[in-house]
Length: 154
Image 1 (cartoon, rainbow, N blue to C red):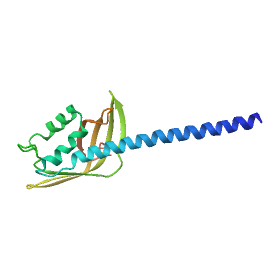
Image 2 (image 1 turned 90 degrees about the vertical axis):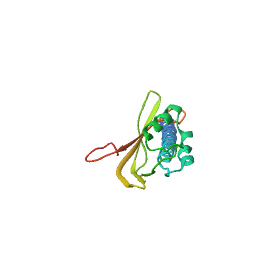
Image 3 (image 1 turned 180 degrees about the vertical axis):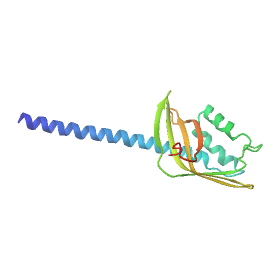
Image 4 (image 1 turned 45 degrees about the horizontal axis):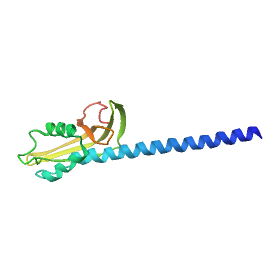
């Protein structure tokens, strides 16, 4: 009887731990999916649409937004509207890379298309490197393009 109780206890504990592990993974998946949605939204905007471009501001920290605008210098008009259209299409789900200094680092592989009146460029091997704080706000967002054997876009 003792062996049966022990075996049963082990099975119950194992089932509980499995559910807890699944819940943790499920929670992490939801967080990563949320990060993916907000990062992709930041890179999907239309030329001359200042309101649409600025809508992403709510998903950034103040420093993160300033950094993003710094990278956009020369590509925004006097009203803050982008001078080109950008579209990022996800190829695979975002992947958690690490956590440092309170920031989650996630990579989102995909393809990036940028177009304007001058032409259109498609980067088939691209990724978004995104760093998010504990409040879920983007602290840094980097557009990465790859060529050759680079693994940075996977």
